[in-house]
Length: 273
Image 1: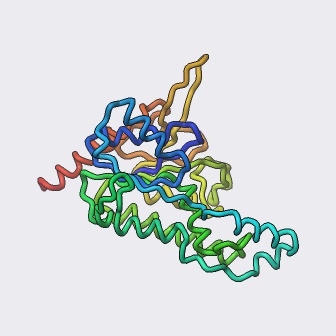
Image 2: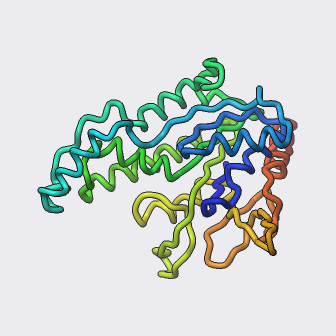
Image 3: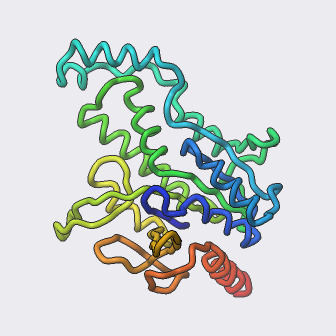
């Protein structure tokens, strides 16, 4: 399992095409508004087999502006305590429920075909969720619905719910799992130092995420004139990273193939044993 994090425009989504180049059948859950465009552009540019790519787009926000109007009216007439103490609104249509439904029964948006539950996928498939930012918004939405803000207990519920999903994906799947994430600077609860970590709910969840993943990679870019180069790093100061298959370097090619090949080698060794 791989946590690929980086700022917007660092090439995270584009690099997902290298999973196809590694020979994997890729199942992509998209929460980013333009994530599918980026992947399709990569597939087209590299002339990859699109029949090996399946996707489901699940936007984290709910449609319609009527709800936003109601929330705006509440903000204009109520104080912070009253807003946080409101009861959560009905949320049976929350995107979080749609996400879990998709993982339980992956229906391809491309052709409507049912590929079954993702926890039945084998090692020649990959599940990708793009991205943690969308998951975080979904986890909060299913907790508080259309409330303007959450109380401390509701923050804890949302964080625990998200934590359990990530644990299920990193420990309950037999296929490759990739989660993309944006970055933010957080305080290390042990050392007190400020470090770059995956952006998610609260202050306590981000430092816990790396332990679930075999690889935690930073997607980065360098520029020289009009040329931009996309890189991966497993060795960047003040950034929480982790590597098993990839070497320790700040100038790695943005390519999942070495990770997939290392996994296949382990699988072959374990099967032989």
